[in-house]
Length: 351
Image (cartoon, rainbow, N blue to C red; front, side, top):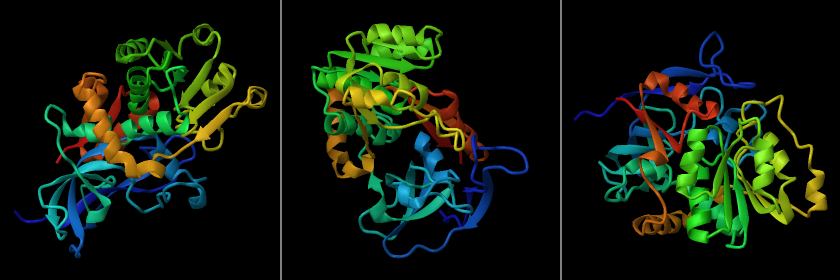
């Protein structure tokens, strides 16, 4: 089979203030064609099969982003939109990665891309598990949950924990690891619909509350009576602010994400209850999973073992896979910010 010489790709066209613009005269992204150069020694040619949709991608294209304050370089205008994904190796000039292998890496929003072989991980498929779970439960979301709970806030069976974004890729794993592996005394989830909440409870949460309910704060106050030791924050904003009032003395916050602010570059939601941090001696602990990435394969093995034992759920409900024409990749990604996904949102790229 002849190798491709051209590739479609979505490039950053204009950095957005607020919600990304998909239509009109000044779109955030532009669809282009690029020539594929010849491979050099140590490089591989990748065909993108699946793209990971992650809220943090929005911070990489913020017009206010400063490279020295980010953990990854921001995407510059004219560059392909950055994204993790699963790709097939269609050609290789590396002895370490064979043609035909499936790998995880950073193929970005491209049809085909070239990368250094050292930058990808060859997937070891697990019988009974779709390969897409290597972007979710067995990828960085599952790793993030395990890392934060065990290394950052150091959760124990004595702790009660509240998890926001509990129906998302990270949140669903926080719920399961906290309840089924660590044995936390109470796990309270927060999600955006009643259906999502019932699913989070099936995963192991003692209770899950719909933050869109008019009685949400009253219900959360009731469920945190006596206060809780840990808040795992995936959303920031108003819920983080309120949770500062529901933490016990010496409580810990795992600051994982702030999706409520990602599309609010010039109008971010701040904290009114910060004095609680002082009076209750709270710890707000920011972390980036890349700081512990050398342990990814170790954690993946632990999670696979727990799945085989039946302690954690990895199934169809753990992810939402959207068959997507290449021209619609940005629209699938935007589902993250409308709460349109349950579990890990994965783009399956049509070829």
